[in-house]
Image (cartoon, rainbow, N blue to C red; front, side, top):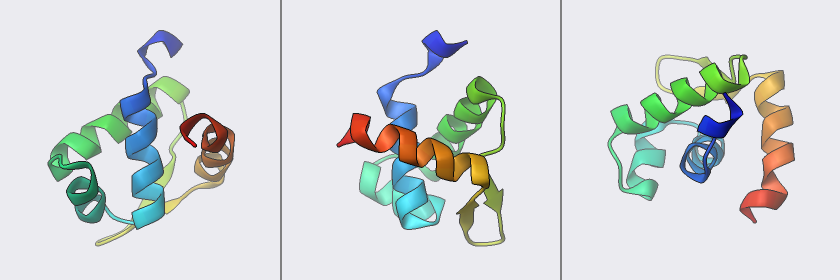
Length: 77
């Protein structure tokens, strides 16, 4: 449901994409890593695609994640 999409989820997505990991994003946003992870999981559920490839200590954008990042950049600027 697109009405569930909000600034907080998009901002968390953008910061994780910039930082490359949950811990750094959590520090920047002053949230827990689990809170950030929950926001990302919900965002992926809303858009219906996986946005990150998850590695042991890092997250890398998928092609869909790269597209979303480009689309929301003007909104979050």
